[in-house]
Image (cartoon, rainbow, N blue to C red; front, side, top):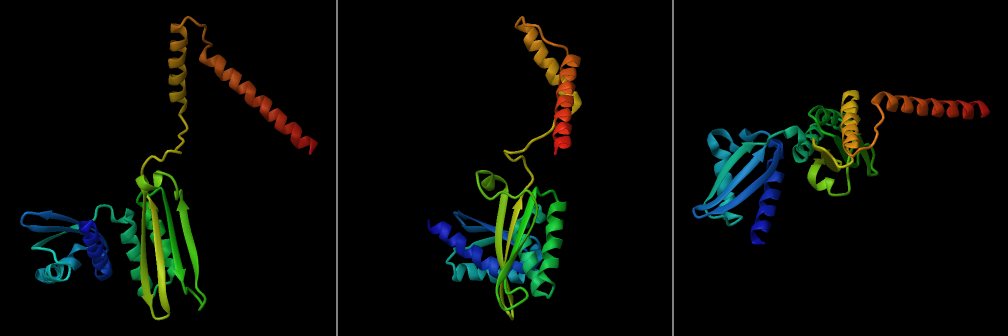
Length: 239
């Protein structure tokens, strides 16, 4: 329990101070020699600092403020930063704080995420966007899941805040990572259908039943489609 609380406190401190570096997460492991801290970020050089000055200061803070014994810090670049919701949320926040229009930033980041293979993206920007009254805008592309076990498997969610003179603007990024969701439907190719029908025919013949030829099945399907089209035409002419 104490280890979990310590990790949350360290994570909040790093997220607040290193969002410019594209901070994405931290992993803390206690060892016999002390504590091993592994930090993941989009730009590790900003956390390491010139000649390691920033990381040495961070070691002192972890030891004195958070009470970690002999912290050994390692900084690595996050794999697939375009599909990490926290990195993208911090990216939107940084661009908004630099003066770019929130809508332009949101669409640019959304297209960038989708171009890297995401199944879906939703970006929500809320606060005093264009007037004194607070409101929110959502930008969505692709398929976005918000319920069910697929959320735990494929969805990555993060929240960040842009601090502007007129107030705080909240940014929420939700990314559906590449994968196979449970509601995925794939249309089989003609060759696959023929192989499947041939396999079924073999199983039917093996049981001693008479199986129709594939051409006969195609004929039955074509006749059914023609009947449906005729019924649609009749309904259209009556209306």
